[in-house]
Amino acid sequence: MKNECRQMQDNCKNEVAKTPFPENYALAMAYVPYQSFNETYDAEKAFCQGTLFPCLDKPFVGC
Image (cartoon, rainbow, N blue to C red; front, side, top):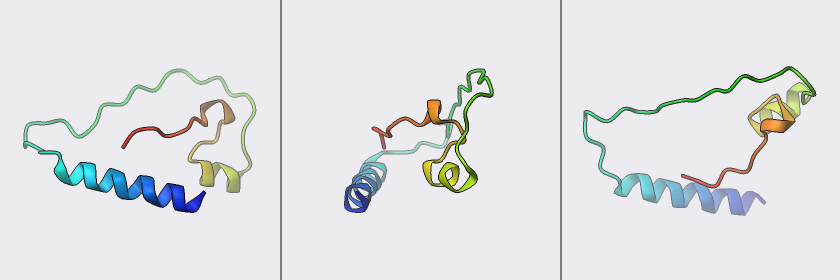
């Protein structure tokens, strides 16, 4: 699993390096839907997964 993650990170770095970044582009836009407070991960697992909520724990498929 770690090798797959490393390869994905390397691929993303290569794509970012090829992408032009004009000064007038916005860095990011976020959409954060309302989240009801249900089941949560414990602190250690939440840190590793990048989210406190299991229902938001989705696979990363982009760069």
